[in-house]
Image 1 (cartoon, helix red, strand yellow):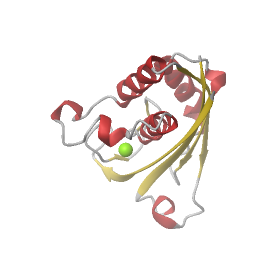
Image 2: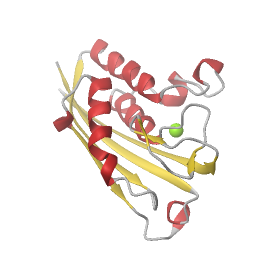
Image 3: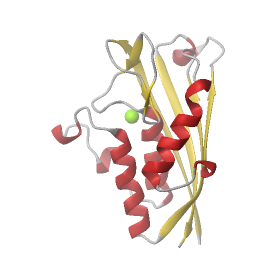
Image 4: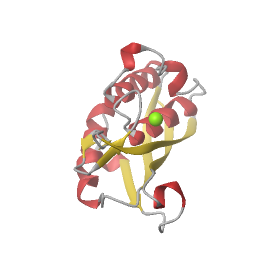
Length: 158
Ligand code: MG
């Protein structure tokens, strides 16, 4: 039995916040705003894992009205989603993701993100793809008002 899930996220960029993507802090003059650490890549993957199992979404499992998740480490949410999928008898085949950000340049951080995500999910880095692209200067990502992310996951019953 195989199942597929998709996830999408977008957070606004604002001054005075840290920029964290895939569990890695990236030096930049702005960061992503949000109740948690606003790691949009972890959020998209968490949503894809929950979606593959039709188990709701990140907001239903980790509500942003809950003070427990204020400034939460989003890798921890990802760990919990991975535990849930193992408890449901599934394992991850592979994960593919996109980050849409005009700046900063993310390529130097991609392998560190893959390693960090793999650790959180108990996978090999070879099972996780992270791709970064600009938005050609248009739209909220292109105007550097926001960073968006997309994830697709494939699960198989273990
Ligand atoms: Mg989010």
